[in-house]
Length: 334
Image (cartoon, rainbow, N blue to C red; front, side, top):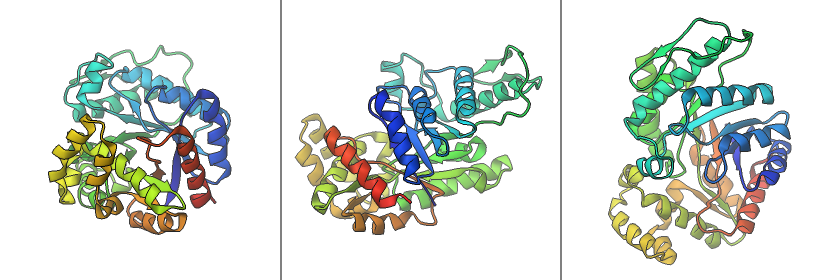
């Protein structure tokens, strides 16, 4: 199983962070899209590395034309010498509409077409006479037909997925699925992987054509209770979102959601932490001393192809996030 880790912070930090990750022996590093654009962050990581894979986890799909996304991914893949992975996500309705002023409709089928458009663009760039006409996108001039680049590859496309529908669509068309930090090993095994298999069978693909990347929350501290509190707060934050309710239902914790939302609205972080019991924490995340985290991460062995090790970002100060990142490098690096 491969290990990846996220990069973030200021643009000046991202390149050196990516280089540290590469030097520590990690297989990949990943840029998120929150305040900064994921693609430019990925470019900063690419420029200071030579071996590590660089991905977006995730870039938002629907605020961008799929042709623009394909052009950007193509450029980053060239810049990196074939090391780029284009991770895309639909995000939720509220963010699409209220932050980006774009229509949110049928995210699963629309994201499927998005990937098909991107591959149409790349095929056209290689010199093929192709177009795409679908339910959501129509691209009849996918390239300006400049000098063909016949030897260029399709960039791997990963989708962020939580539920059965998006996981199935990953199996149909994506090169990989990026799991959510709240998705426990049990949820991945009982919900996500079977849905990938269903999608792959429907499309005549192999299950192995779709990489499964888990994203367990990791917090490491000499005081295990400090690490557990950090992870519990992150779990509590995620659990207030309706999309992730099936995960809590699987673990018999759906009843805590109204109380979590009340505590979140009241900005009562202590109450949020209190509502996440130790068993739920251990089922979803890996928190504690370095030795404890190494042991707990074994839950994902044989289940995922890669783990994207994610510090809990809701709560800890920036200095503490850097400390957790360094501990992850030391604990899981080569």
